[in-house]
Image (cartoon, rainbow over all chains, first blue to last red):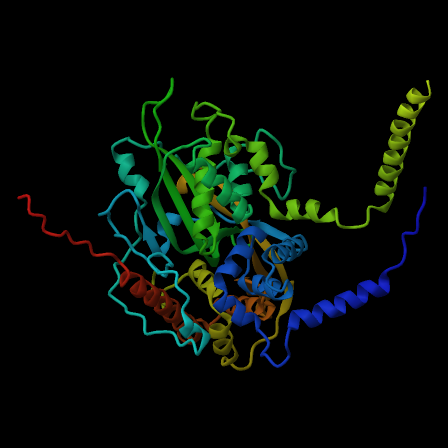
Length: 362
Length: 149
């Protein structure tokens, strides 16, 4: 059956014009600039870069403005833009051991080389609304102290020395790339980490929380959380050597998890890993917990049937663009589909209604 | 890192790729008249897939992409310059490629003094300020005297 599929252009154009006006809001209020969003809503910008899977603060700020602050819509815009870019190549793996740390804390060791550096954190704030910000927001003078030179060692290295924690030996197998090949299961850890680092923050948080509440509990401690800048280096063929092509801010979380040992491994601590674009602390901790839960099979643990242990469940539902695309498409016209459902229900009701009357007549 | 008088090609290209436009382009513009050149590759915006390592030290995985702009050009004297910059600025990529090419000419000493030295100082200053602010948030633990001893 064919039905009218044209029409609505004028309504759509007018809706978009109104959208643009609503986006701008009250014209007596000053318009937001991209720089203002980038500088003053930086954690929103970070989230859009992480889940949009493209590090470019100006583009993320533009996407947030265009999306009226709807971050998933902004992530959608970034993902769409990303597909238009030619890929120049892959970087060398970033060295987070050489990170210029702005924040570096450990929940497992009080006194550790490099110390506990709080950085610009919401922790220990009272979560009371600060009405001073509603007036003029003048930044306070920030105290400074002489800084130690040199890189800050990873906490896992201390446990490594005693052989108490699993090691992560370096190797250079080229990783799979889910932007180039469809996700296939079972997914190896490199693919899982790529999917997790761009997964929805809320979904990741919920799953990580479920492991803490007992659905595949893995007793995570935050061995280390660090935020700071790393250089991104790439081999440039026309030069014949590697150069830095940029500097990015990353958040890295390593969890230290209890492990009773298995047939092949002695009792030791195991690790979960989170690494996310920008200052993205909640996401990074969530990623590490979910990464650890998904490793049950390689560590010889029991599958207790928890959602966070189910690779296919986690990876197939963690991407908010795939999810929102499928979810929101059901609001678009389904007139023909529904017409057939309507016909079917009417037919079934006719048959159901006809039968008792027939029985009564007999 | 060596100083601006001794930085090698890898060093200056890395420095220029990360330099903020607002710092680099005014210094570049102040150079005055620039030589003619031929494009070997006109400026193009693209992406680079950034890799991380699982557990910080293990096998690599794909973390996500970043925007990069690149170009290549040649001076009448034959020197080839390559420009790579983070972000989407074609003027910056072109300026980097010109500096890279001119660093292979007798203009090198002047470029080291007028471009590389101030950019190195700017980068070091920014890193130092953030490191000093971080250092001020380092926790100094102290233990309360407890009467048991």
